[in-house]
Image 1 (cartoon, rainbow, N blue to C red):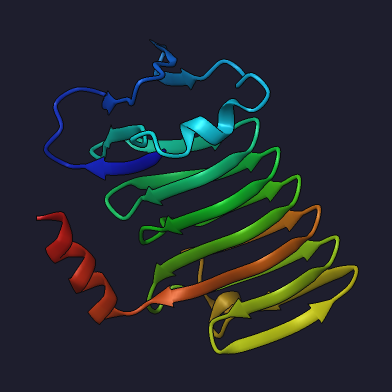
Image 2: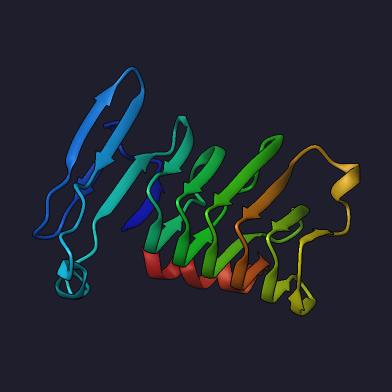
Length: 194
């Protein structure tokens, strides 16, 4: 699935799906996109299917929650006013690009994680907590090969600002990076989106 924000969108959201269409509902400001479970072995066939694309109206604030785990998720949230991001049930092959925060914004991934990259705007401080151990962690300019138990890192300026990210992974993590999105990378992404 691909999730992104769009400031010119008039509707609450817009979505395009591959061959497998989920149940979609919107009620009282909550949009639910729900896929029924995949039959055993069906995930092999679905790998080549076009990813679902969900575009959110970025003129309003959003809390984004993915339940039941996430695999092959790309969330370019740069255009959103993000209140929180939660991924429950584990995460695998996930890329998230965060917007500039307003206040302290929580990002929570529980149930374990593998091959997850989170990028935030340059100059935005963050705290990263990993519970359950971590292997191959990159946090800005720091690299950790392996650490057991709980791990807690803070970037420079975290304690001196209220506009920041609090990022937590529970259940352990493997191949995890939480880094700054440099201006040149951001400009390249902007050109690709035009």
